[in-house]
Structure formats: structure tokens, C-alpha cells
Amino acid sequence: MAAKPNLTNRIRRLRFDHGEMTQQRLADRAGVTRQTIIALEAGRYNPSLALAFRIARVFGVAIEEVFELREADVM
Amino acid sequence: MNRMEAKMSVQERRAWFVLAVAVAALILCLVLGVLLGYGLVAFGGLSVLALAAGTGLIGWREQRAGRVMIDERDREIERTASMATGAVFWVLFVAAAVTPSLVLGPHAVMRVPTAVFPRATFVAAWVVLLVRSLVTIVLYRREGHGSEA
Image (cartoon, rainbow over all chains, first blue to last red):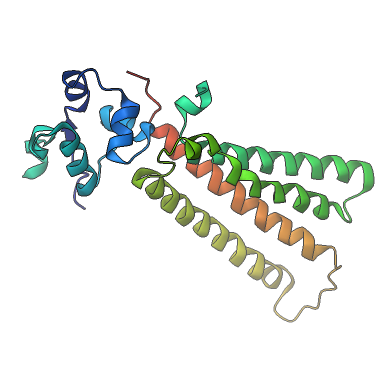
């Protein structure tokens, strides 16, 4: 069975870089609940591809600048 | 936004409400059973379980604010909880169906009082609500609540 993808993200960092955006504001703009943003930041939830794109779009960056797949899981 | 709303999603608050309803229904059944006998106690239990329909009222504040109430993560948890509930219900259903034959033999004849049917309905509804709410709560808690930043 394939291992669960181990995604890391820079959402918290990007929020602070974007005028200390609150979790609620990011959630509203990405179309999810604040609790999902909390789970994402804690690394406890892997988003769908669509959500990953929406979050990257909120910050105006490429998806790779927000999410990173750990090398060990790619092998 | 109060503390509970800040900490839990709408779906999780609904699961806690359903769990509270299930526990209240069980307590009411036990109390009524002791006071009045267990004959018609299931009707009281079923009446209390009907309160679970009130979950629709939870989340009105988010709805009024135009916020997302349920997203992909909530739907994923909901799907897992439904599957777990279905599995538990199916095991109990099959067990209830085959146990009399296994215990009494395949040709035994049973006289079943009519009170068994509302009681069985109550137990089935209670199991569904309890398992579904418990699995939902466990899945949310496993992902943690975190804090505002």
C-alpha cells in the first residue's frame, strides 16, 4: 500500500508575509473553514489539489511555493 | 464568535449535539424503565432521538455571516463516519438476524411481543446516531484543534 503523502507547507509563514492575514480571512478566501486551515498548518491534513491551488492563488504564488512533497515519499 | 465556535467546526459541534441527544435518550430510557417498566420505554427514547433533527440549527451564525460551513475535510470525515456506522450497523443487524436460529435451532418457533419492534427500532437508531457522532468526534480530535494566529 502506498504511504500517505507527506506534504509540508508554508501557509503560516505566507500568512504573516501577507500582512499577518488571519486564519479566518485565508479560510474565507480559499473557501474552507478556519479549522481546516488550522489542520493544514499543523500538517494534520493533506488538501485536495483544487484546495492547494486555491490557497496558492490567495497568496499569489505558485503551488510549489506553498506545498512541498518530502523526497522520501516520492521514491 | 464564542470559544466553542472558534475551536470546533460546524460539523464537529453537530456531532457533539447528536452524541448528547443519544446519551440523553439512553438515560431517559433507563429512568423510565425503572419507574414505569420497560414495556413502552422505546417510545420515549425515540421521541428524544428525534431531537437530533435540531442539528440543522447549529451553524446559523456562520451561515448568516456567509462563511463556509462544511468543506472538503468535513465531507471526508463525514464519509468515513458513514462507512464506519454502516459497518457497525451491518454487523449488529446480521448478528441479530442469525442469533435466534443459532441459539434456539433453525426450526424453533418464537412468540415475539409487539413491544420488541419499537425497541429494536430505537436500538438501531441509537446505534447509528451514537457510532456516527463518536467516529466523527474522534476523527476531528485526531486532527487537533490548534489555535488562532
